[in-house]
Length: 175
Image (cartoon, rainbow, N blue to C red; front, side, top):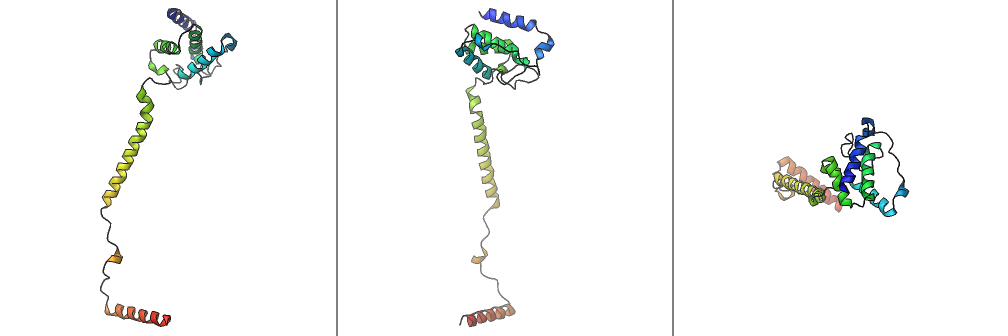
């Protein structure tokens, strides 16, 4: 059955002109949803979210579900044929990887580490920020003693007389 699927895909690919293959900007070819059961339609739509369009102009940036252009028609048709042929989702995705000769066709990578990467990056940035803050605090060194705790500088005779006059005036105002 796999060889029949591959033959159909290559046959359809060989029969298209270069203009048909680009399909960029052109409307996608319609298909008749009544040809599929509700379960098959659900699987097809789900697979469209997990497979990226192989159009070289898009550079693996759109899923089949998000690509309304004709460039995704061939891949969409291959997914529909795979579902109709009774293939599992994993077999259809593996077939896309084999045909396009790259893992880039998968919208979701297989690596479990790929799901943790955003958290690891945020954690590393938080640690780096914390280390930078600690270093900036340490650079300042001990703070200077407060002037209130220091002994006042010695006053000149004129300053002492002025201070005494101000104190006397304040006491008179209080009385």
